[in-house]
Length: 137
Image (tube, one colour):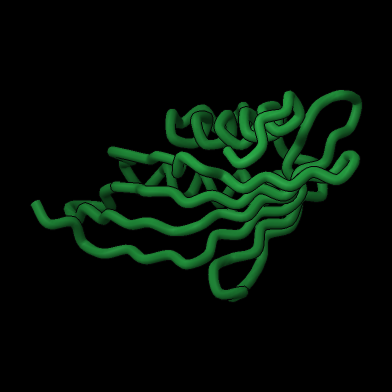
């Protein structure tokens, strides 16, 4: 992490907790990390999901159809904080199965978080620079 203040650590911990919840299939936990009017922009700006419930449903659809074998955030997230707003950008690696096909890939995630009542919550998310392929056994 480029900055290691307590606020930067808290922001990064929030993003890691979101990822841990969906990877472990604990989707009910996501609502505590998402603001009610959160927006998720789909890759290449091909659409968007609006509202925490709709976004959690996208995670549910993925988790209902895929088995996640590996997910790891990059080691050097970029976190910028201005008052009660934070932007987070980091790389990730993923390996998952859909049916009998296993995919592996990497990409970047960009998150906007807002601090309200002493806790950080996500208000915007986008995945970009996604490269996925069938895994070689």
